[in-house]
Length: 222
Image 1: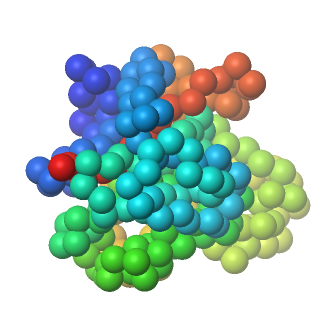
Image 2: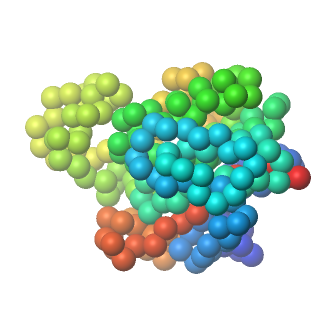
């Protein structure tokens, strides 16, 4: 990951190579680096719902992933431990922003976003570049067996979990993206734990209801 000291954002090396693209993973010091009238967002509900942004800005409804190929439009998600994922199709100049909490991960929201891009824009998974941003890491994300068992379809060894387990949500989402056909060499993961790095990131696990939210966004330059 590359830190932009001016905007106080992180950028992914793979995505940063595209001059037609703008993107950023927010930090606690970045503030609301895009205004409500500067990007499209959703009422995030921990679902598998993907919404196509047609050029409108502001809240477009309920869901957990936004896709667009409209030049000049940024699409974004907000997180404070959940996994932010950005997707870019370099051939068709289409993008997606994905919010993957544990429920969304179980529902394979990242795969749904890939499928929606294929349906709407003709995207081939093999062309996609994916960046998985800062999120709570397995070092800090302990869950009970009731949650762990729900991941049995993705992580078979959790099927018989009877006690606390540490989940690696970024890695599970990486596996989901790879299973759709996105080449592993084209998937980058930040591996920056939001709970560990209090100076850089908000964390719901660390701060509870007082935690702010960090904006992650991507868009096709106009």
